Image (cartoon, rainbow, N blue to C red; front, side, top):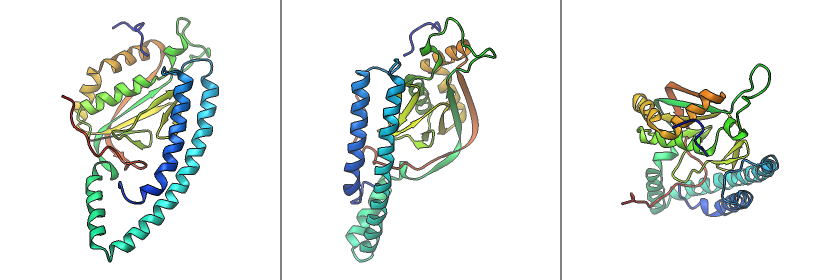
Length: 248
């Protein structure tokens, strides 16, 4: 394909704090959709939208602080009650067992992929034929890397400092990435624990990654892959899906 092709513990404690965080996140996503009209945001209004997202992010961070305090209080009370309530103790143990896949850290061999926007040349300019969209990392670029890593047998994946769960949805807003109510600027580091050779092969076979690498070669976008011992953080925030089945 030519480079010019378009690339565009569920627990009782959750019941008190989750509605607050969910409300803020819902408002944030609604604002994003209304502004983009369902499209990726790469317009002249992106700078102003990024400011709005940062303001909303501060609200999420404040809500998260209150959530953490409530969560700690509820956990302490649950632990105290579990000492005398056998049924509660069993329920909490079952919840922990069901959530172990993402609620515990993971370490092991794997790869990390770093994506970053194009850098200016020594004269401080970009290639003449480049459009603004050609010079930045897009949402689909991040998603292509994620797809490749899962296809390559990744046991766990992390973007920046956040564990990727079934409900994780990276969103591109202006020149930033919105993830779990927080915004990040490039470079974007995507880390996976899994068989390194298979992960490398999956990255090489993913069409979206191939296209991104073509743009990287032409316009100076950053793409690096490192192999070694990787550490994946435990997931926090809302629990993942509890009921699902493969599509037929």
